[in-house]
Image (cartoon, rainbow, N blue to C red; front, side):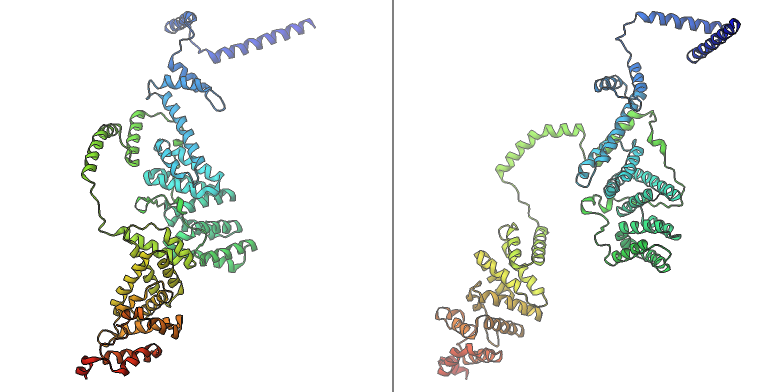
Length: 601
């Protein structure tokens, strides 16, 4: 018994000594005792360590602190802000150091992730300048990874992420190329693994990149061909979702390709090998195509941020061998880090139109001189710039036209037109556009007469302008087509019948055989027929026989010669309005034409 206990004790001691030896071997390098140099180095290191015990512990080298930060700041390790700020201050002394580059890399990664995660359709215009302030050339891998992850997490914001990528791609095409490469590789992985959820999200991302014209439409047609080659319920559902998202732009860019794709859908539908739900999806897709994808625009108005001239469209295929460059997602020291950062800052100033500090100082220095010069110029009088191209006038006419044509009734149109700010002298344009819109209609609409009446009643300036329009239209009546002539005559007849336009404008009409043409006679005929329908023949006759207005109607019922009087009587009798010529008939019967008529006979 005693011997067995002694054997166990020796065995336990031997095991303990061996474990201690292994522990020492892990921490101390093995050195040959026969090597004098190594023994000397070991003595020096031991002596320096013993001397270091007297050193002040508060004095810490900056490199040591940064290295300790690297070791402590691993995943899940929290450092207080004051500690991080102290480490940054120590590292800023040498911006080309690896430690400082690592710190800036971590800051870049957090900033890019934060900006991509907070972007939406409302704030995208404010996020883009902040994103460009970060070094996207250095962090292009981080940007692409963040966009892909955010899109996978929130497929509903896919169009927003695609718009963000389109803006970045217009300035840095290599970033757009890298993102397309990774998205296509992700598509291939999801397709091989039969991961429907990931495939739907990836396909939606590609569809909106096609909508933003980041990639050619050939990729979309190639993808649809792949999905419909061996159709299953899932592949057809993914294809339907893809066409729904980007069908609008594919119809414009490749109508023949879309026709071939829909023929494939039709063949799948007729074969009947797929489920009922999938068949309904295809039928719904045909309905969308018939309405030209109404409700599914290629790009929303608030996300159309890139001008047509600035678009950069990549051409890429599913069959190409692509390099995702995942090494860009991790930190790699840069030998020329400071120079690259300065180069990017200069590039951003060029792209965003910012001014350098020297330019800003020069501008600030010259502000006082500009103020003095401006004061002198104000005293002399400012020079007025006149727009000879009449661009403002064309825009005003377009606004008036759209307002008139889009209003439901004349009251709504009048309210909207009164809100348009008109410069002095532009009131005439309103009357001209109203008359032009009326003349362009196939048949006369009372809507225009009521609108013109409302403006005449509101402001006397409009009434005077319509008087000028009457004179102008009658002088050029021979240039109008019959339909336009009829609409214009009915429009002015409405204004006269409602007393919106004074009757003295009729003094401009001279109804004689020499002074009228076929067009002007048609105009007078329609004008008085409309007045007769509106007022009645008796009331119209009373109005024309009013002694106070007789001087204005002498040109319509001339009494200077028997020939002109008979021409007027015969004209109104021929158009069915002989009742308004009773006074002129009596005058002709009385024979009071004087010597002029005698000489004429």
